[in-house]
Image 1 (tube, rainbow, N blue to C red):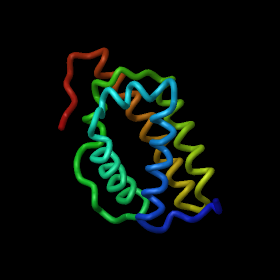
Image 2: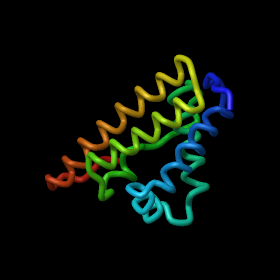
Image 3: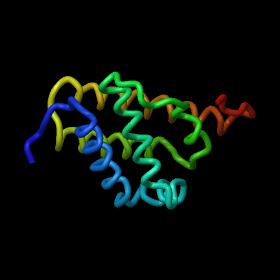
Image 4: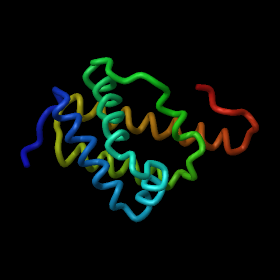
Amino acid sequence: MKRKEIISLEEVKTLVDEFYTKVRSDELLKNIFNERIQSRWSEHLENMYRFWQTVLLDEHTYSGSPFLPHANMPVKLIHFERWQELFNKTVDENFIGDKAMEAKRRAKMMATMFHHKIEYYKNNTATPLK
């Protein structure tokens, strides 16, 4: 497959689909995702298309709080590292250019933030804001 620039929703869908194919077969991540999402994979993927379309293409189709559904997940740093590794691998296998680099940068920022926030809520009585 020839690597392409991320310029439209078509590439965003490829990124999301290829990434979650990896996640769903990864020994460390698959059970966490499958237990959380269960039979709602198509809904989850649609949300991820809209999220990354908003982030990468500046086409505002996503609304909501991306952190809240993750606030009580049983994950540690190793899970975020694997998530980021699979995400970067997916980007590198399929895409080139500024948007590809932006996708990896944003994913790293998100993984770091989610990890820190999850750890905070595990260790404090505060509840995540909607």
